[in-house]
Length: 353
Image (cartoon, rainbow, N blue to C red; front, side, top):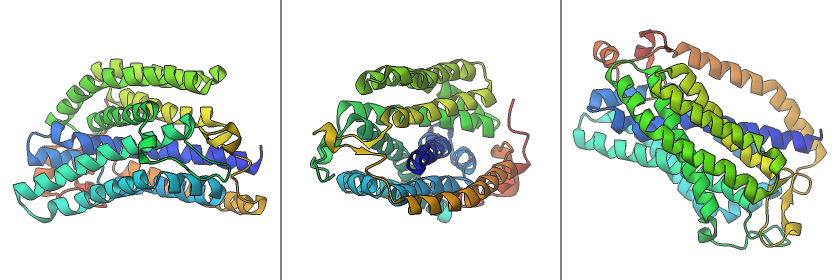
């Protein structure tokens, strides 16, 4: 395996990791108003991701930086062509992050309503925009012989990419619901299981549609087992949620997210960005990669630091592994989710059923 192919795999892993980890964060952000009937219950939902959400976003930063360093032509074409969409993504990331920090600054119903809305909107837009972007990489966008994007913002809003965006968003919703069911107790857990039971069948239908449409679009039938795995995991999640198997339901939704994102990269290979203008204009792993020396240095640095990051992030999840409920916040007086918030909830019952 060449270093260029290795880095294509690494970037695929980073995007899968981002949407697996941030996926349940986005789901919690979209659902916190629905699983919480009052402010205290909404705080419980938010505090489940308080200690981890900003660390999970690092995967997106590393994925973007990795694209820039390993495949500069891919980065240049995608980030210039998708400029407006990526600006919207950046705005959504900002308002979502700010909502975590600002929500608890004033004890006002109107103030909480404002930042709850910002959190919900940002958490909805991000997976839709990321899904649309990934869908367009595979479907193809107009690229000329100089590897310059020649379309417009509206070119990106085609049926397949929008369908992928909605699929990713729905998977994040059900992934967030299973995470809440796993990490909370009492009324919030009950509401999360109910909402997950409503959303999971719709998400499964979209994943099945994705599993059919993607091989038909890309034409690589031999690679179909990956999207089939996504569909089977989504169907399993429907049954596990209704059976109140919180831990296994979270595993199933996680597998569905990972397999769905992996499908894009499996069917994209050996391209990194398909041109709808001419196949000769497509960007491939070979013609878009950096020099061998650059890739070698990146590989050495990643081999050293990536395991450290994984260990640290795993330790964070271990420390904050307990369920939390309304009683934990009442007893501790804990505030909303800021970096490190939710520690009071870590003393609850063990997470899992």
